[in-house]
Length: 459
Image (tube, rainbow, N blue to C red; front, side, top):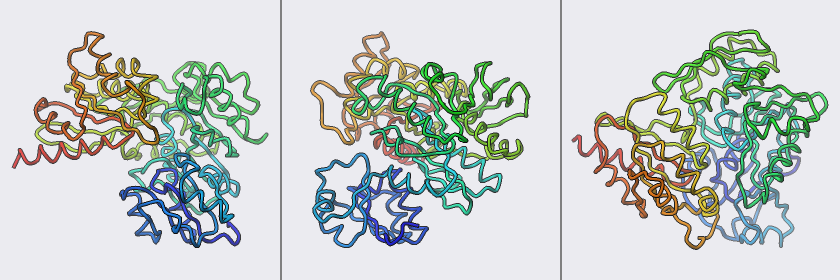
């Protein structure tokens, strides 16, 4: 497939996007090595599959490789990248590798500010249910597959398209879909117009026989549809959508609606997930399936069997009549969608633990975070998970908590040290509550520790 290239080294291999490609190439028989800073279930799985993982960054890690693949989070001053360039070893971005894999198949991509991972997984489930045996590369571990990569035997490949660092512009899909567009990744896009233009370029990259799928409920998408140059199929809740949901119902963290395609009711859809946002995600998946002439029964079954993605409203435990969930939401819109979905599905008191992700995002959106998080009955905010960033003066989780308090909401606690949060939860929680940890960092460890403390009390 890649000619004489047999040995590939991934810098930042533990990332969801990187590990999926690495897993796929291991299945193809390539020799894969990689480096990252911490051992995780993802890296351990790659090791079991035959990959060699180094938990540090050193020049000697690339002494015998043909190509180095780098994550967008890896800077050019990384010692492995610098060494590869000095030795004339090709260094390519993850998105370029993904693009090469897509070139040989019927490419379907899912882009958007929110919902990419869940929606890509839904598309994969429907195609799998229809026995189309797709190859899947997803930015999260799908519970149905217990993986973020699936090697299929057909000509179809479904991938999550990331707008960060304009990575998705390297892809050349036949079907390009967009869930929504909202201000994000301000370190890459200095204005909202830059972001809009990037999504336009992505959408218009499909061939003349290709298709753009977009959510007409989104105001920015509605704004730019006039500039789409290829065939378009819209979806959403709006009456003008080509594919839409009607008769929507929510119960016990599940959703149900009737699927309508160009004024014709096709049948009922059931989801094991709550919230309008997940209904919209499923509509995108259904739209792609209809384009591929997949029968409604397979659309219905694929969506109903979809169990979700780890860290996307993932149920972690149920102890002492306390439900514990974890969610990857790290943008105000995502938080609002998740908490609104919970409120529609339960009368339990909601305790949210939020770990802000990135100093830059916290600085820009602290007021919006405060508004979205105030949907909680009780709220704990801990300090910022920095990821790739250095601290910004006067920016911390307290910036959000102070603004929440300023708006008149007194049910807020700022617990700077995340190690103190599990015990604080033990102190304030009671039977009948739902506790949800939220954020793109390592906040999920808090839910694990809280469950452990609860179980000790039961004993």
